[in-house]
View (cartoon, rainbow, N blue to C red):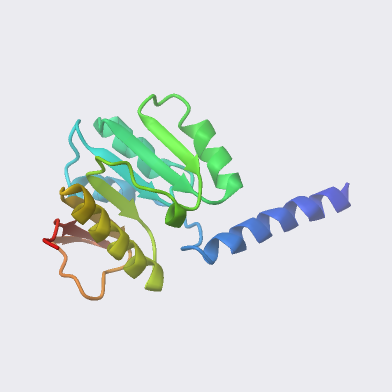
Length: 171
């Protein structure tokens, strides 16, 4: 029995460490932080909301409750993906993907992206969002929890949340 527990715990540790190479480690978002995230940019019923590294789905559920058209989550950890699928099962407007976001395409009509990423990962995401805005000719609102973009001025700051707008650029 102790051998099984050892392997299960080992698999959990390895899967959580693996995710760090592609983004940030899982850190549960507290209720107050989720409320602040929903207040920094009032979401509308026509928004397509994307959570990069959606963890247990708490932010997706908050966006769904506000009434966004669709809340889409990308999660790399199979454990967190399973937890979020269970916790979000009653929400028809939530779609969660077990996928590496860096290899995925944002939904075409994405209007808002939320994430908890740091360092080079947040800069990489900013480039991906700007490319998406340019390609589709539509602005994207970006909410970063905990980390500011080094070369872009935030439209609004609320506690540890930074709101940015990526407008299409002429090429």
